[in-house]
Image (tube, rainbow, N blue to C red; front, side, top):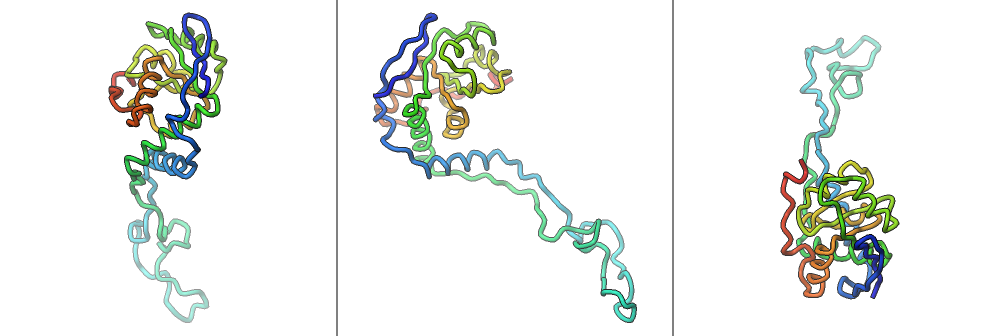
Length: 222
């Protein structure tokens, strides 16, 4: 068992969470592979250079081959001349790839395990009913969290998203959008009570932790 802080009605208490439901050891290689995959999938891959065939200009030989005392030169568009083409330069490409589904789910479960083990998980209720950055920050301050926080909701919560979207060190994500990278990129996690209940229930049943949670719609990001 591990203790997690619980904020409710202006008071902070604690309760126990069964850590064994989430795992028994840190899967470093799985976590690393998952983070690399999610980072690679965000790359645009737009880098592009021109080859000598794409450089504008004539293909006339610069000077005759012999008897000039100079090195032979067939074109001024060669790669080692200024303004020339790039040999084997980058071209637009996709860096996208996917780990197996079971590996991604295992990475998410283990990422939450590491946060629970290190005492970096809390549960908070009493979020503002209308968008209010000040009120939302008061909840985090009551938990002693002042930097690097991921707030996890059970489903789309537009008010909470609008309250915290301008705080550069706070991310808000619904449970359906949670992944290993989003968990590990922030030091602390704060669940809403409904989100924590769903995560514990799915972990106890051996189900994917985000199963059954509705996906966040585009309106919450606008």
